[in-house]
Image (cartoon, rainbow, N blue to C red):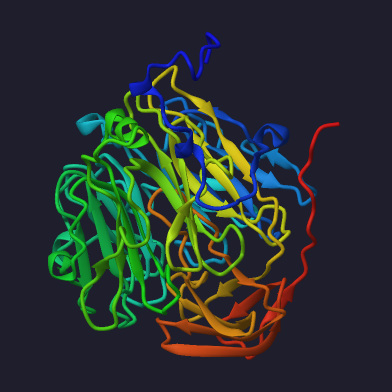
Length: 534
């Protein structure tokens, strides 16, 4: 292309057919507007969280950079289409590193704290303390890692996930370490943690790259999936007595053998949790061979569909997931508000040459996934890391934020924010406030019933931050297609084993539901356009 000889001057055996750049369906283009909003931070690989850190109901953006000199940053949503860098006001100045970040209210005080993970890929050189950053409620943080007991032993990691595994009303943390014992930090209810992984039977001891919680057997107690690079994955069933049993093999979810990012979700809206586990057999040759129509020689991603009373079934091929992807960061959301979950894979590997297009899959009515990467403008070539879906301008549809940049000096890059052009569908946003349960309702199940084009439908969501590498808001943003109203919203709280039902709910609004309330509260928040210069 530089010489002006493309495509005629490219040897036929190296010329990628133009059909490879065509999407399976018409899909609008998402513009990268990060540069207009000063969100295009030049950074190395890192994490991202989109959530409300100061209680104004607007979603902010928290990013990290794994470099030893990589400054964590908080971008405050001003509610007028702009963001302000509040790193200094947030007391983050001088807090460096962090390949991944996730939000949690570990002290149950009603505001979101941040957990940052460090040391991945570095072997014993990665035995660095992680960070628990405690929020004072105004978006100002203090590092309390040592004070809360989470820095006694430090191992290389980039993945950690929070859940109330013992249903005592506070959040516990599992940290997946690389070639060292994993850690399960139990919260004593006063904000102090003890590692009980050995007693619980979840040390794993493999090269862990992704962890996620989900109650796959629907017994009220969250179970744990551990994605290992180069060894069998684990599915730890919660025995409800403080111990776990690995049932990955009997459940059919021990692969891919080389895997990375993972998450629980309900991709087909049948009310049963499914599981995604990415394949991470790296090499640019696998990607090139696929684009040139050659034989595939790597494992494919696993899409494990849950069943009511039996093992999972890998339906990846039936759902069109037939290409090597090599994702690091990844996450899911509903781009078009049709009630079916789509997902984005931020691809690459640490070596400099590991550049390949990132990938967007759109759900086709829950029946298969179509690759809309190039039609939507999502195929960024830079190394992708943490991913978050979020409605940052409160117009009802989700934007996509991607933390870009590689591991080495000279391989950094600007982060991207892809603006959603809109699809004309309706939506509902729900944020939970627990009382007997953890404060943000993590682990609760939401069911939304509505009529769409004359057909009765139900959409299911579980309150989580999404994937193992990238953090969506804990506020659930749920598309309801063309429905003009919602017949019923059902919320199940596993800790208290209670269910709330609200009928005849208006669409296109943000509501807050308290665990002990008889009615929901509407939160008024106006939409606003993103700033553009000129």
